Length: 253
Image (tube, rainbow, N blue to C red):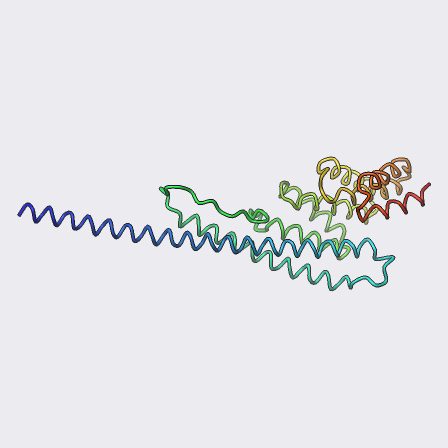
């Protein structure tokens, strides 16, 4: 009798262990599936961020040459493409946030070792329900539509809410451009100066130096204007702004 009872106990323990193993496997499988979804979303975000950057560069080129290039692409078409990509990125960021929350919920607290997740192209942390990419694009769209006062407010809010993203130097630059278009040259100079000082290796530095040359010329400080324009020629001779700086220097000599 005692042997049968003991045997029955071992059998019950075996069934319990088998059940726990099945539950653990199911949770692990869910976690792996969620992790794969995050990885796929991250790759798609990377690709779309590259497309957004490409469209932004084309928009900037049109902005620089809009008075001299009669064969430029239609500005409205580029803006529409930018807005379409913005909407797609916002949806991807929302999906990434949901997948990340699902992964957190499915991870067991006593996991033997943590699983390293793929980083996303931009942080998905939101402030007041908006992601960094969406906040930047809202302000940039205001700039594209010549709503410069709204753009100033939008970029200032972005810099305050998201000070550490890869878009922050861009926001600083377009804030300066917005001030410049409002003919607020003093604040434009301060903004471009800050960008050059705080982000010396950023790709926006040549453009910021060139715009410093224009803004200081508008204020009558031709000596400082020439200094900034010469920096473009000397430090960034292969940049798009180099030729523009050379032409401007020829005007103010």
